[in-house]
Length: 270
Image (cartoon, rainbow, N blue to C red; front, side, top):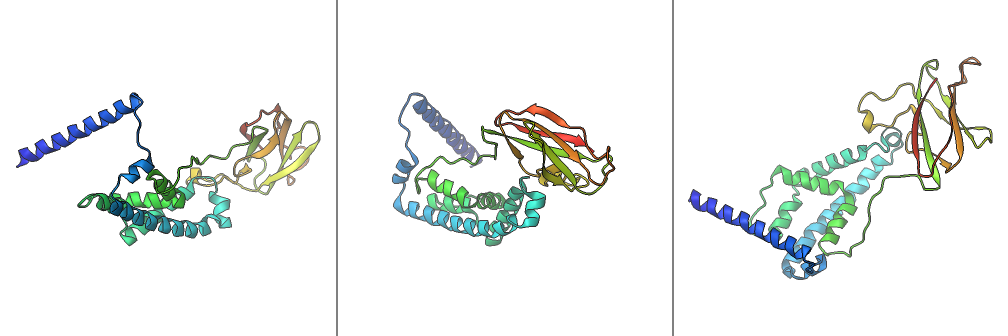
């Protein structure tokens, strides 16, 4: 019996290898590969309907979870300490897994049952994968619906924020030396038009616990950068009004001519 089972497993493995090889040869020879809509047309209508029910239920739950988490993500305290540091992903995944386990929702297993007989037997890993799908929000489930041909395809890619080609981003980090506490002013001189106050830095120390997941209060601005026109000549200097004259200014950064699309982070000591 064990020998027969082993032979069956070997046969299934080589069948899979042959199938993949045929698919690769067809792709290399320019053969027409079915689109998701064409594949969907070849699926049994009952299976197709059951798959849609499962995915629509997951889409609805993901939409509700997304709306609930928006309250936290738009909370001012969250924005001050965690905005732009990737913390949203961790919170979303944890919330998604908790919801999947609490509801005993295994989308992989349910889709498997809709297409085949039996269970996928993924166990806890199935709940984890479902949690990841829910963490992706309605947009993530929407991509699955598009991939299976339930919805039309559109190429939408999430992009990290970047400066426009007509501008550059500047960001300065304060290293306190003479200045021990209190707000430090950030001055910008642009194209010899005189210095302008563009912001303040009120932090006393950089975050030591999970610094990669928290905004840095010693940086201005705390997220992204301060936009200046491309090809302009700029100089940045810090000032602590609490210090005596002659000791209240940092060494200047610049003057430099910045290129369009540049992202420039630098440190100044005061």
